[in-house]
Each structure stands twice: as C-alpha cells, then as structure tokens.
Length: 257
Image 1 (tube, one colour):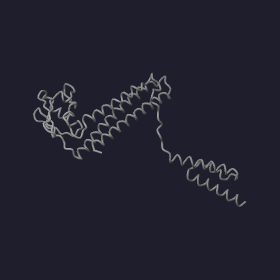
Image 2: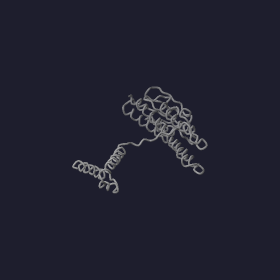
Image 3: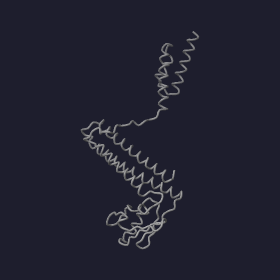
Image 4: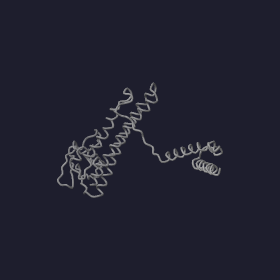
C-alpha cells in the first residue's frame, strides 16, 4: 500500500506541476483525483503535452518550398514570363557592376552614363568626346552640345562611382579618386544601392503578377489563386537571393578580399 500511495502522490505531483507550468485547462487538472489506474493514462497524456510544448518552443518555422518548374495554371500565369521579367533586373545589375563599379575608373566606364536632357535621355559618349591624358583624370568635351553640360555633370556625379566632376565652360573635368580604403567603401555603398534598386524592380514585377492573378478570382478556386501567388513569391525569393549573391561577390572584389 505504501508503494501505491507513493506512486499516486508522485503522479499527482507530475500533473500538478504540468498544469502549473503549461496552463493546462481546468478540466484536465481534475484528473489528479482519479483512481490510480487512470492516473497512468493521464501521466502519458501529460508527458505528450509537455513534449509537444517543448518542441513548439524550440522548433523554427520553415518556409515550404514551392515547385516553380511549371505554372499551376498556364491560362492565368506564365511563370516563364515572370522569371524573364525578374531576370532583366539581375542582368541590369550585372551590367552596372561590370561597367561602372571598378576600383580604378576608366574612360570606358563613363560611356553609358545616361544624361537627361529636354530632348530625352542620351548616353554620355553620344554627347561628348572623352579623353584621358593621365590616370588621374578624364576630360569630357561637350563643345557640340554645350547646353547639356550641366546635365552631363549631374549624371556623372549621380552615377554612383564616387566621382566629383568640375565644369570648365563646355568641358567637364572628372578627377579619378585614389584607391583608398574610403574610396573602396564608397564603391561598396554604391554597389548596395544598385542591388537595392534591382530588388525594387523585382518586387515591382512581383506586384504586377500578383495583381494579374487576383483578377481571376472569379471563376477560379481559392486554392489555385493561393498556389499561383506562392509560386510568384518563390520566384521572387530566388531572384532576390541572386541579387544578394552578386552584391556579396562585388563587395569582396571592391574591398580586395
């Protein structure tokens, strides 16, 4: 009898502690007054409850992967079109990194800087003649389009290359910064800005296709709409990751790591 009493007391203490620590409903608390043979069943239930709570606290939410090889409904969404649209943002980022973000700014790096004029947007090399007499500066001669001089200087300044052009009549002098730690860090900031711009374009594409899908709510099951949206989100995450990887590689290159 002493052994049975001890077992009954121990099990009741287990249940009491469990209900205190994990806020078990009152209806469960009453089982501590059941006969001994039922308490063994309650002990198992209590242990299971404790285990579930323990795993719920420790577990991490994992975003389920969605199959994006083909669209859930081709009549509503062309996934290849989504991918192509977002790939354009990645291609533009690669081009910016290759043509404009280099440790030593070269004459060719300025060629495709877009200059906004009253007549439209033009590449800098179509408006002015560029020469480099030394490794410390580049000269842009806009004698043929003097009215675009101010706009050209602004475009160079805003190109994210850490350049500070100086205007001399219809000629722009562009001093080339020395390769210092500060210069490298400024280039990294520019690289981050370009990466963020690519992500904005990717998110813009996502919004565009989400809106397209939601226009088909009538006549389409909620499950289909949901799965299509999940596919768009999955593709978006993939291209955002690509942008982040490009930025990471460019950062290492610019910092010389």
